[in-house]
Image (cartoon, rainbow over all chains, first blue to last red; front, side, top):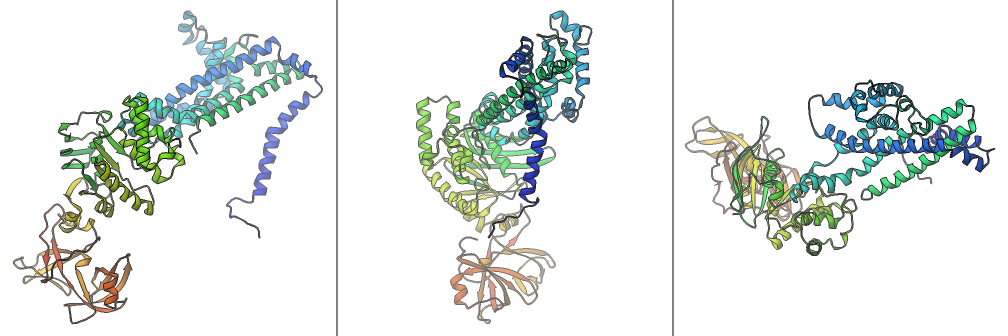
Length: 274
Length: 366
């Protein structure tokens, strides 16, 4: 006799087949294609193309700026989510909707707006530049753009978790004598950490792949404010397909490695949960 | 006197959650705050803890007015309905939390936590996280955590609400034993009158923010202050009758009402155990058909239907039932041994009146 359980959705076979086909077509096939292009290239040749001084500078900027931007978002995104969940104030819904703005705005528009804002003649730039803060056409500009596009990831990841956070836990800490700071550091912080890491990872991953907004504000000076995705485009425009793919493969490996690390970190932070 | 509330009121906007409540709790008492949900009992508990600030009135703990003392400084142990354990901390760290804040020495913390874990039968669970515990274990951890710093009073909000029926019974007995051993003043909130009757020394009954009665389980059962209490504690038959020529009447039932003005309506209540049944139709004054029998364990509850269609509830032991040879559909005679003229809520009740010369016998339980 076959042990069959009732399921709402049609059979396991059909859905699993579809899932595998989907993942294969959308994810694995392009990745395989990438490696196929590298098939005729020796490892030395690949390594030379992937680690030119200019490429290394681009990796450093892409991952460095993404990391900084994601970290900024992890901190301030948490504050924003906290305020939006915990407090009631006039215009709350408006501010809540505003968080999605970076999602909705075409990245090119964001880049253009930000570079205008921070340029020497811009609204903010005219005050910041005399202070030595160059927000446009520098690596700082890259961080600014990546922070902008990454904000919603942390806020939107954290909001549902905060909404379900048991208020009684805070009261329990208070009855045991804990002040606000102690309650936050010992209880709320550690409980939220896995979610903050998830939000950080999403913002980080998005920032690594970001292209549109960055190229407008970065100035794209080689060795200084040129991001890796842009370098791939430049290589393509030079008809150096193999060179472009070499950089792409490096990006792929580092991104994958970071994803693994972040997943482990998330697991560690949520070790006390089911 | 351990805790005293004087004219405590609490308003949430236009809603009055607690209205002019005063009562006191003696040292070492185990007291129940009882009432239907929304009655204000949890708000009272939270005000004692300092989690809620009274709109007016004063709270004293051991003679000290504590209205302006913060929740952190009050030194009370509070057990939340859903326990509110810190899920990012092990059982050991949960229990140690209050001690660490009070800056106990590391060794003293360890000794105290181990002492509590042993007392609560949690010795081996120190390194576990809350999600790895059963409901009963979680509750014991919550109580251990609340008791760690030796609070002057232990407050429990619906302590048996979140566990299933069988464990609930064990926990009740366990709480009584624990209170007996530690002798810490304990106040708990419940909406279950049976629970309040079984566990506490005294009961405070709330309804819609008002204190209806305060007394021992026996007092509130036998001498309810008003109809609300009479109906809330246990099962009671309530009849509305009209007085004609000194007799209150509803269909065939009659109660003496000398001196009551003609035409006035009276509310009369009697407990199911006060209804005496016989299979001998000549023995008692009224006749009825036994409609349903409800099996409640040792006791049985029966529904009697009078010829006029009026239904009343009675109860008896299994043995009596068997002895009388009763069954559903049987024709019986009965009398009402004791009854009480009920007043409206908040008004005092007339003393219980025996309708016959029988000795007053109170049933066990409800």
